[in-house]
Image (tube, rainbow, N blue to C red; front, side, top):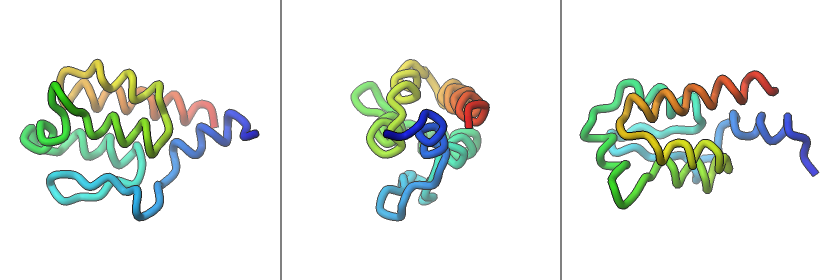
Length: 99
């Protein structure tokens, strides 16, 4: 069984090539840090492409690939791109404090 530190470290690590998140604007995201940066400078159009009332691609990727259900749950509460970025940044800081 993995230790909590190993689990937290894995959530901060790069995903493998086939699991990279492909943004609407063409960039590929390999980790939560890159997601945070992308959320800070992507257009509202790109954000809206991935997040709607019916779907949240970032949430799905975080839950299914990064394997961070707590972050995925919190991200569903974000009402806009800035709030989503803050939620991701807060989680990054929390994870980094524990590895």
